[in-house]
Image (cartoon, rainbow, N blue to C red; front, side, top):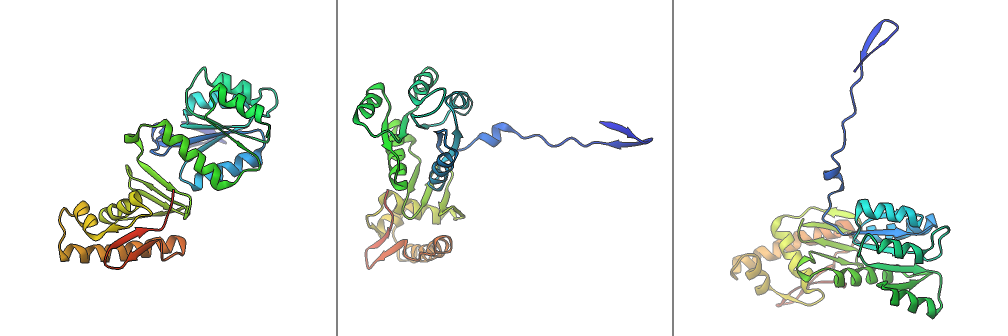
Length: 255
């Protein structure tokens, strides 16, 4: 579009638009935090982001309903004590538009409300103040129950803060994205699925190369060496992959 200023024409270049399909597309699961305290929303979002989840927040029941229709999260964390529309009312309205799991995070400790929430169909109830690791563990448990086993394509290890996405081959360690080759990722994936058990050299060789030979075992040792370097660079921990003498390797991580 051209404009005239003091007899001089200038051309305004339009800003490039955003492809919202690409912007919103993500293989990760998403969690919506519904809480009127901004500090609590921020804290829960950070905890979940560090565990590999996409997050969004809503500070009122009405905002939660509107966002839920647009974003369609995989799980909702819901506070009970909110002004105007409390958690009980918000839950009833949410159930009219979605059947995604809902976990209550509330300062209300009495057993009557816990029982009421569970009888209404809410999936879990955790009280404030909460422990970060417990929140993540409960979120993982709910999402495991709510999705078919064949769709579970990601593993999250709160300790040491490791996220492995098997569909995209994305690896995040303590918020650092780690670039791996195909074979490096294949080895890490096998160790993760078996963690914290030991995976024998032969199992790795046959799963990744389809054969177990001295040359393949040497290749495994070299790739594990490279893996350790990359993991150590991200976390400062050189022992995430432990060598079990004459047996194989194991990943020092737990769900």
